[in-house]
Picture 1 (cartoon, rainbow, N blue to C red):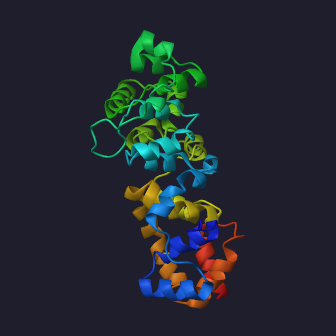
Picture 2 (picture 1 turned 45 degrees about the vertical axis):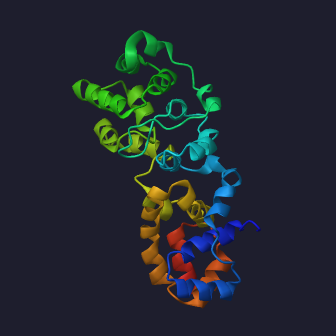
Picture 3 (picture 1 turned 135 degrees about the vertical axis):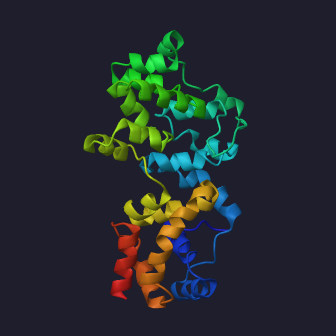
Length: 279
């Protein structure tokens, strides 16, 4: 069985948002193979992530929320700069909502946990955050915020007396920082810009509708049922009305989309509107 091309994956994802009859007719019209089997998609996980450096941090979190040891091993090498996430994965900390039991971890990952910061040993979690006077020290301290209890402790400490600016910054750009705590830190324009630059998103709909190019976004979403099945439906629900309104069951519109998608630099909504308008 051959691998699907990036364009085929992207168009196939959009066809999955239509009814079966429309999808079958469009596939015949544009010469697109049938839907990719889930086992085939899972078998190409590593190859699909060769460009993971351009993925937003929140997408990595959505994968970790599955609490799947196999998926954790796949994304491990793409979180090299986030010591907090690496430490949590190495210790089997669960990310999924409501999960309390530890996630199984391979011995190879356990041995790669980042070194525990000396400031944490001396001052404890909150003390290390309050003691941070540089971004490097703040990033080192925040790497020890792992569990839900840790995040609650940080939230309470900041509520009692605001944490230093570097600590707030380092914590806010963690994709697993609770939204309520991030809001507690403030909403200054420069602050929200830093969060955006770090790739921290409100959810899958934001990625599906605002990131570009559309080809890359849709190709990643096509892996959603394997990588982050719990959250991918949110992205589907955001795009489904646009697929219906701009393409619908018009085979000519789908044919235009298939021709445009490889070189289109805009967002997925812009791609759908453009294909529909041209057709």
